[in-house]
Image (cartoon, rainbow, N blue to C red; front, top):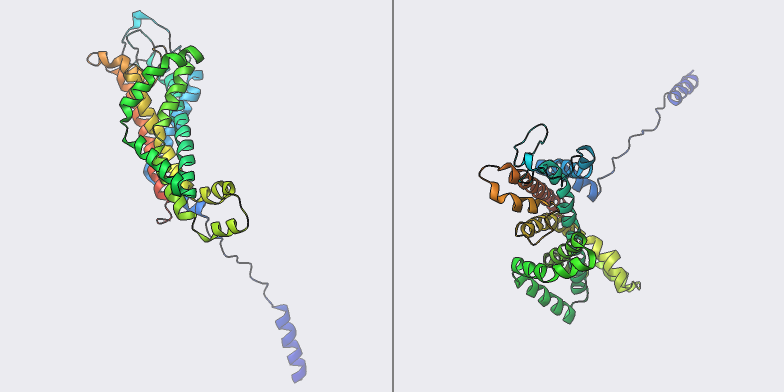
Length: 317
């Protein structure tokens, strides 16, 4: 009887065995996911992204929806205020300001983006070479950087534009020639801070163990620079890239305001401010709307850049 009861107990226990647990440990966040989570919690950054997205979509698709020509002259409608027919009003030539803001935004933001690419390319190249090789090359490149930082930017910018704009107009035309000149000059005067950031990062990362191991395995200097070191110092470059876009937009607006930018028939935001400065008393809308476009664009980019700096800082993750 005792043996039979033991057998029954063992069989019952076998039938009531619970299945193995299927609980899984959640995977830890990657650095990219953690940075995005922190960036997403920044209300100013999200506001900047929404405003910048609205501006970008407006200047890209707006001219296809709002099809009033930006260069149509109608003196009978000169300096009209905002209305249903002309939501932003008209300028002194009767041209629709909304159409000109949409068309000019393409040029102003394109100048900002391409100038940023020039500045980031030059700064990254010079900073990487100086930080990786060191020695006399580092001394020469950094003293050249200090020299460029010491130069007064705006007078030098105005001088270069004044000296070379006619030559480039003759080569590539008035619009493309001025565009190339402005992009190269603005980008060529804003790479110094990027070079210093990249050099500082290279001086730190090149001494780490994984770089020493890669060098011991026979990695070439080019591979060490572009594959092993640069991806680890790219975060401050991204922040500098966002801020340099806003700097380039403001610089182009300044040049156009002084009459040294694009031709008068090309409606950049700075050119529109220049054209409307004489009508501030009785037609302030001529400068309010392009000025607001510059303000919102630069503000949103600065918000995004500040949030990126905080999100990508390893000490704050």
